[in-house]
Image (cartoon, rainbow, N blue to C red; front, side, top):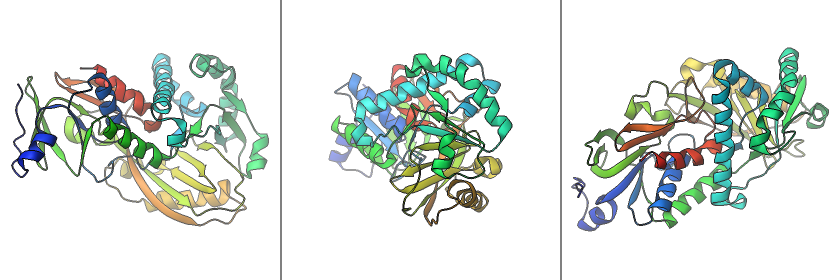
Length: 379
């Protein structure tokens, strides 16, 4: 029989319903956290599962991301292959594709507004474009077992003119890439979790985790809480609790335009090895990235806009993406991702009753649902 919560500012009823006899506490209510809670409830229907979230909304990137349902552009995969083993790169691609399948099956395409317009990679460097174009045949063979397609990637240079892009030397299409509505996805994940009996407590900050083998005690902003098991899914904020050396915060800057009449493109777009990315949302353009302009300042957990990066985003919109189109920026924001020297997520036991599920590498939409399922299997 495990210990009761030591919180003192709550009534008998509140303690009984929310804090006593907790089987699992999940820290973080983003994609991975909610997926972990849902997966655990699917295995243990009657278990009390509590998700703790420090913000009034998910604090990291889950409600702030661009909504790319992607698994890797050609240049990004080429870069990964230069820095990681081939097996690890393709394992990670496999996880992203399977993760998207879990998300789509769990919520349904309508609930997340999934649209498979395809994804495109833009090249302004002829040498880089030719290197990537030469890799298409090999990559199509490698990825066939994952995408079930003979030709996932193809050259689509004729669309450069159709899309009215400027200064672009080549365009490579990934026909299996899609986009989602991030807000709808998170709203429906929350509703699904609640429907299964998961308790979500917002504005609760966790400062310390102690695994006593028989149970786990959390020091929180509302007092101590106790559970049999804990999953930490705070991604870019993992170091604050777990001191993991290979998970660093990575801030992503994003903007969105006002509606644009006769917008000429639909789909998701990658530029400069994925450091820049844009897409249509209806007839608006969402544009983000530029972290490579200022790695030092963007390795941050502070939600601040970076003027240097937003100036660059504005310039690329004017000169490359929408060179002959009037547009106005309506809103700007940023989100915090978790990255490391490798792209594959970290899912492992930290102690007998504590599991971490972090380092989505900017691919949380794709990989997060699978990572949540895998986290539960660690117990």
